Image 1 (cartoon, rainbow, N blue to C red):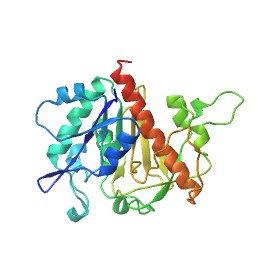
Image 2 (cartoon, rainbow, N blue to C red):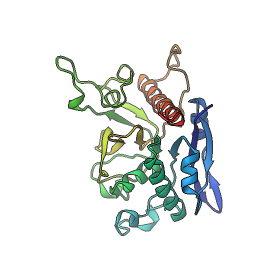
Image 3 (cartoon, helix red, strand yellow):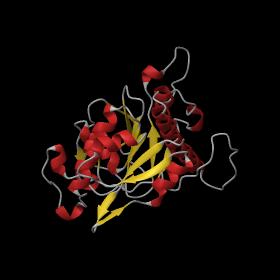
Length: 270
């Protein structure tokens, strides 16, 4: 049986909303997607029901969530509904208690960071010097970690060190990766127990994970968009795309397939 993946959704103009790419990415990676609407009760039951949690993108976190007042012009902010944020924080807490896998994207990443005591830039352009536009495609780098090194070898990438996967062959640490991006807020103070694995070239944290946890990966970009869903064993074809885009597709595929595999393990009680 396919692992059940709960996908959170946005609230806008009295409607629940979710882009179709989230559902397609989960389904094509082997999961059974269900859309979870914010509820005022039953959070533990939802956490029991699902095998993995996908925290989707959306509006902006309210600064009060991380102990700040609004310090940018209010028109710069598109605040997410408080009902949604309260629900997802509570659901995340229950899912983590059960040690089930979590994949968080854009707003979802920011929410996880706040859940662990972190903070945000309320607007990158106004609050960070020399930042470039993160509301369009830009480049990131997977960063290294010295304790992942084996004596007598060259440094290897952080991701395969964490998960023991064959990801190093897909990404050359000397080459940036092109990612799909549409955010104007970003991590300022990193939450407790979280570790960075990806950064943009202007110093913005683009990806982090939770240490000593089966799978809690958070990315600021949108791997579900323009994702080429193909099996790891399939032959790459000449698509005419920039090689960096090919690497990005592999990273996106790695995130979703690993997430679903971890959810499958959770389903089996592993």
